[in-house]
Length: 147
Image (cartoon, rainbow, N blue to C red):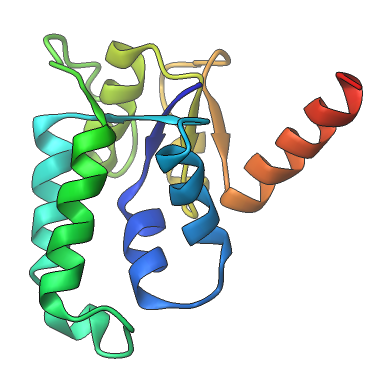
C-alpha cells in the first residue's frame, strides 16, 4: 500500500516513545506500507532533522537519527513530481505533499494535520487522509472483514 508519511509522523517517532508514530514506521520497514518520497519532501525532512531543539527529549542521538533517516530513505519509493496542482491547499507548504501523493499513486497520506488537507480546491477521494490512529483502525477493520 503506497502512502505519503508526513514529516510529523517521522519526527514524532524520533521525539517520543508514544508508539503509534513508531508503529507506522515499523509498517514501512515490514513492507506493509510503501512510503513515497520526493525531492521536496526529502528537503523538508532534512530541514527538520537539522533542528536539534526538536529532539532534546529523544532517546536517539544525532548520529542515530541520521542513520535511521538514511535507513528510512532507503525503503522509500522515490517519485519525480512533474506536474504541480497549485494553488490547491491553503497552506502552500503542504501542496508538495499532496502533489507527491497524486504523482506516486498513493492510496493514503498519513498525517497528524488532517485539517491542512481538507479544504483544497481539488477533491481527491481516492487518497485517504488518515491519522496514524485512523490508519491502524482501518487495518483492524480490514483484517476482521478478511477473516
